[in-house]
Length: 299
Ligand code: ATP
Image (cartoon, rainbow, N blue to C red; front, top):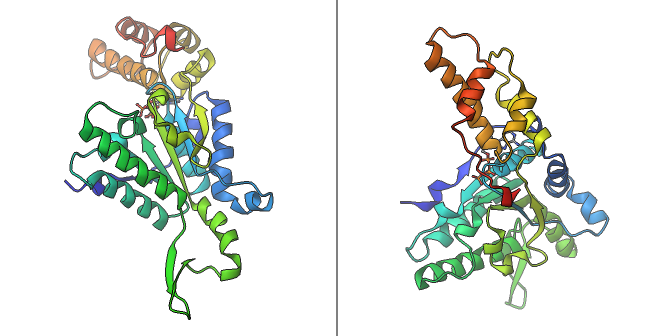
């Protein structure tokens, strides 16, 4: 299959208020994603290097993907997503080609956010098998090269003396250095992983993924908010959302979304297709059969 076709360009907007809890993470993302994409000039005025890569880590189902989409929506950036597992191909050159293609599409749609989900599955710590190891090494080197040159289009020109000169496209020679800084802001790479310990250290050096943000599982208040968000269109009576939040320690956002869905299905199957409201009993009934994704050691 043509790997490049797996790149997802997703235009569906996500609003910050669709994500429950995570106030600190939202603020960190506004600063590290929205600011550089929307106001690169402020960074260059203050002599601040523009962040090129942001790494999100935390247990699955806790809205890493949604957060990045919300940041893209808020600053009107193109959102492209490619997962490590999709990129993986044992055929020599396929994975690297797909990754380079993702970068060139991101540059075409700039300002963009290129989201690399499950990055550990393609660039984990040195793997045992030599086929996997060589794919990892080649993809890592493409990623680092692309990140070093994010947003810059290089033109090759022949000088009067017949030599070759590499220049940034459309930028006057006296401000090449300055423009390379500003141009870098146009594609920001955001990677996500559940296993930060599995990443190759080369990724975490300064100038690469040097903003690292933990996306925790939801606490009590956040669970209450998430249940409210996912049940807002459900006709309910007597449902005690606070009590549900108390009963769901260890549930991720995805688990809570599932709880709401299951409660509706429970109402349908218990009381038939004419059912009009979902009750506390429906929630309590399904809760007994659902298990939290996050174990206490991860909380
Ligand atoms: P994975 O690591 O499995 O890719 P993720 O951390 O990227 O997971 P998402 O795919 O963003 O998680 O979340 C899965 C779904 O769970 C979302 O589509 C959303 O409906 C729901 N969800 C997760 N966290 C929240 C939250 N804080 N508020 C509202 N909904 C949430």
